[in-house]
Length: 301
Length: 290
Image (tube, rainbow over all chains, first blue to last red; front, side, top):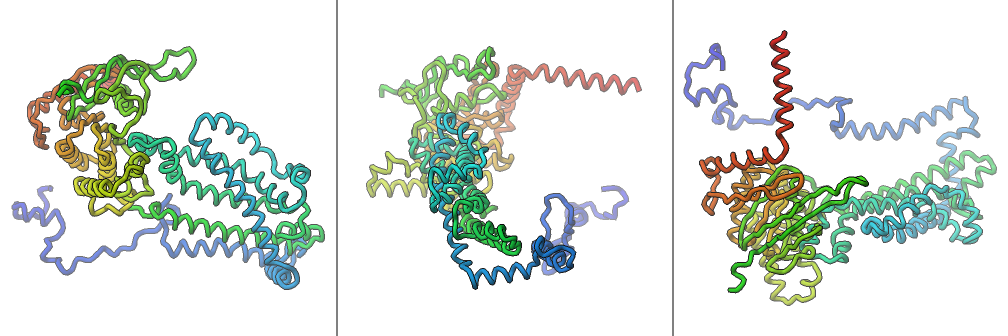
């Protein structure tokens, strides 16, 4: 404190009153939280923005392309064959629902995707667990898996027709080939990320190998595994159109392929949008499941 | 008692070498010819510069590392791998985040051998044990919380309680308070001393903090790096019952100075210090020249 400061008494209480907050008895019923609004800069790195602004931006981000699309189509500068407008596409979806079997197409496509993906998961989860847990299994299987996953799933279509035939099995097989090898490697990585200290703690408590896998590795990796399943579900949908190349008579991918033959671009748009919406719904469902199944991840201090 | 003279933990001629990182290179020696006896109910701290092998020695005692040569025994029985009589507390990431505090503490009860042979009396005694540990560690009010809801200090209390659940004879602690702030550490120090008096476990405690090593340990084992070896064993000249003000007492400070000086000598810090001195000297010279 400098000599010029207006302290007249040097008693500790007086000093504290000058340098510290005002005495409590004066302010006892006046203490209020500060009300200056927090600054909310747009471009502060990794800084939260107000909730309302975030919600507005989400709406803006979703509506902008839709409006741009509508304006572009309505301007008449682009041939509707190249770019049908949103209303035209909506109308096509309505026709599809009325005159053809829209719900059936959605159902059969979803069934194929889920079946191929579930088959992948049923094999990839135990295999990835073994690769991530035992170095011997990793050395044996990982290079091969890495090699196969770079092979284009599309190119397997003729082979699948020869091997599996042209029934439902063939469509499921294409989706399986597209997702399985990636899934194995991602599951193995999830398992390898289980902290060694969690495993060693169980060892020092006398856990057997089977108990460590069952009571530590699997439950520890579960949240990451559900995320992997969610991401690979998305990839499974991207292989749908390829899968329905194989002698299909129904399904969203088949509808797109048929519309392509007749240059019905509005129906192609409709099919693509529907696949996107169904995929989004499943993705959101799995995110909800993630929050429900792993409450301990969201209860941060 | 015939076993009276037998130490709790005995290490004889222990060597540990890791695989050479490059071909043609000599395998790095983590531990060179370690002999160590740790008496029943002792509190021994291992301290030393990084790379001195203190953690490796502890992990070998836990059975998590296999020795390259030498013998280790606990209660006269050779150590061949991890076992529930030697519990370990890690620095972090060892709690199970999907289990509540109480479930974490009871984890060892879920393991096979003890799950099969389970009478109602045993279940009751286990529940009583878990409750007692929750109270001892001051965790009763967070028994149903998840570890992610707790502070770092509280998480380490859970880890210690979990390790104590199966009444281990030996508690091995690998820098358990290394990630905690200074105030929380002080509280944990007195807590672990209290646990030691109450549970009568033998504790081997690894740390790089000399003050912590002296305050907690009845004996301080100073290790030196390259190759990892035991340099000096100090008996701490303080009463068995420690209080925080002893950290300022003359014998405490004298031993602290002695240990710190010895660590500097063995850690190869001298070349770094010489370099610093040269830089500072050059800086002074430049300032004079201006």
